[in-house]
Length: 439
Image 1 (cartoon, helix red, strand yellow):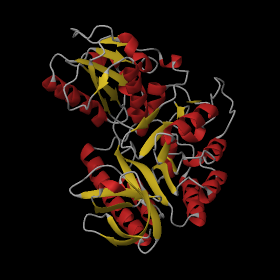
Image 2 (tube, rainbow, N blue to C red):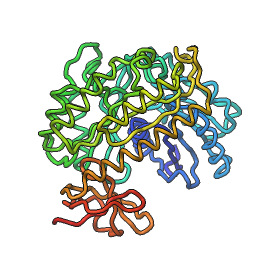
Image 3 (cartoon, one colour):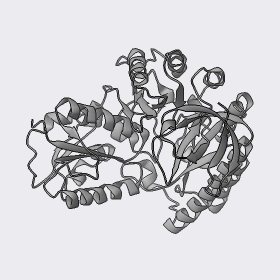
């Protein structure tokens, strides 16, 4: 390959996708490509796709058009979840030259011998049953935190979700490899590691290619907490039925794990949770939140919720709204339900009109803003530690406390990737918190 060829990457979707894009990018580094920013002119553009929402599908086509404007002769490769689910559809998008599915994406450099444009997109996509092996990944984005993949795939059968079809069965990295990757990240000067996966609470399943758990998620966090050089560890989204009391207690006493949890709810209505084939009822979710707040009153708790699921009447939506309003949580990630091919829910009766979905989404986003403000107000006057990030945004540098309060202070490059003890003092008009240094 020509050592001077330039490659650029664009990632749609979740933290897991970002970690995998970084691993794919390192493969290009090893093959002698020069990595450039996506907005720059490149010889090859790799787009890591998402299938969770309809917007992610549409966004892909917009990105390809942007590539064509930047360099009409550029080679365009699509990888990831959407590429696994609908490879032929992506291949037909004007400008796309190569589509790689779940097992092929990590071998992309093997498929790129000729960067000349194709009349039709070339597809290499396996049957999802073949996606039964594990490829470890981690990303380093802004030099302050890394996303470390510990698990992939999912054995759950939620009626709205395409992830099992796009990523295959639940499988885990080996404990040793996770720990080695964590040490490698810490040696690069990264201060915070975020654990990511499709269903990370299921960690241990498929660790050595078999279904039984060699280790548990509790084993994993226990061992990671002992790794020297890591200043902060953060758990990304974890299912409420897999978040055990022992894990919550460990975080509360941990050296490195921070008091921040993101726990998918999807609906506050047990009727809808059953239709979604979730593995818990709202009572268990309430219990998880109560347990966290019991041992970590200052903990930040984020919630995923879906609006407009088939059968969601006005009353059932209000059940969810009122449930969340009364729950001691810190913010919401609101997803407007979109029909996905080959899911059970796509054929359910009781379709909610899109204008009603949009109205309900707006209501919950407003509730999220209220919850975040209340959480921030509860933290005023407290002392926290903040990790500063690397971007100058309109004369300010931003960072997050250990319990995920976003703060700001006038830009100072010396603060980048440093941790300071602060006292939270004031919430500004933009909703961000100011502080006084304590050290």
